[in-house]
Amino acid sequence: MRILGIDVGDRTIGMAISDPLGFTAQGIGTIRRKNEKYDIEELKKICDQYGVDTIICGLPKNMNGTVGPQSEKVLAFCEIIKEVIKLPIQMWDERLTTVAAHRAMLEADLSRAKRKKIVDKVAATYILQGYLDSIYKSKV
Image 1 (cartoon, one colour):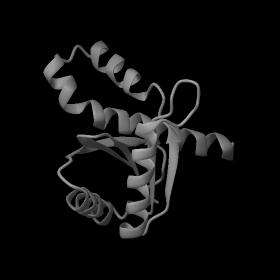
Image 2 (spheres, rainbow, N blue to C red):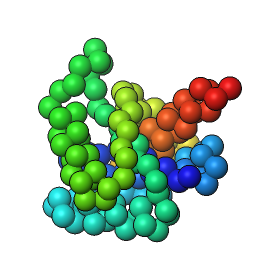
Image 3 (spheres, rainbow, N blue to C red):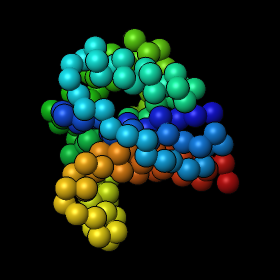
Image 4 (cartoon, rainbow, N blue to C red):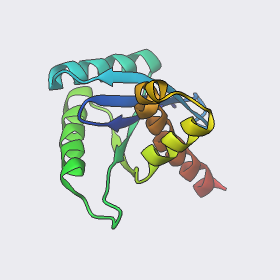
């Protein structure tokens, strides 16, 4: 069981992959978005490379829990992923994951330039780890 976590933004898609047992998430990179076809092809390559069977996508809800314009863009993109890649996709509330990612990188004393390059990958890792932790807690 390998699960891909993604953080879909307007310019990039951060990615993280689970270990084969589904306990931990590891950031694996960022796709610099070009166009829909390219973005999907790059995601498909990652899914094939790692043998992904499920995708977890962060849903950027508003702080009051409502779905705004950015969430709608992400949901529309996920529908395309489902049609083309043909893998199940689950949405995961990503509120504050980018904030947590920035905080962790600040604590690690990373420069602003380094933080900017990896923030989406780190956010994807937080999204996926949150999902994996929820699975583990539901089994215990």
